[in-house]
Image 1: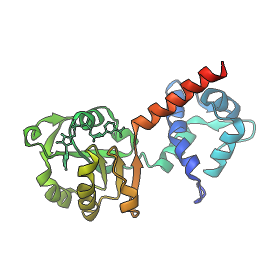
Image 2: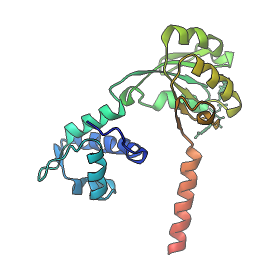
Image 3: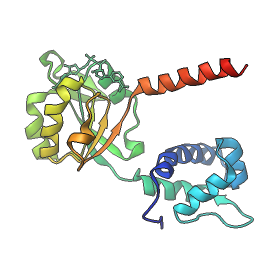
Length: 213
Ligand code: NAI
């Protein structure tokens, strides 16, 4: 069993372990040492041993890690076997791309509704789900009890929608809007996604490669 005080930095690395283990499992690899994991993932072997010890220590001296077991255990810790009922708000360019291309089901989520305030979009299908008008949000949530919302709306729209969704029982937000949900609703879980942060990190790395040459 994982220790209850697993640090946020370990949690943040788990999806990468999970993804990598999934790939090698598919390729037929049955066991792997921390040294090999380290070479292929770019973490140090001691970092890997520390991380996996935190989760309950799945390795065996001289054997390494059983890939299938470790993959399964990390999946359980991440909750990918759950199917959290999820809705997406904002079916514009970003919302449609996220709805169409994310494998929600493989990550522990079940996308059950897509909403937008633009009446012209109502009824259009995205991922086989009809876009619903936002006026139907209350009734839909009351009938279906979603616990997660993906926000793909501008920040100026996000406050009102977030307040309503929290009242309706939403406990987790995958937040692409630039609205700071966490400071207004510390009681819910929020994962902010800012593609521009990733781009700026790339910019930093590029500029540092140039400087070191
Ligand atoms: P878009 O204009 O194509 O789509 C926004 C959609 O949200 C529209 O269909 C609009 O009708 C809908 N909407 C606005 N307020 C609403 C409300 N109260 N209820 C329901 N629907 C509502 O814009 P796009 O490109 O899809 O971007 C959406 C937002 O995401 C933008 O504000 C942008 O700043 C942000 N964004 C964030 C990124 C990130 O990495 N976090 C990347 C790209 C965009």
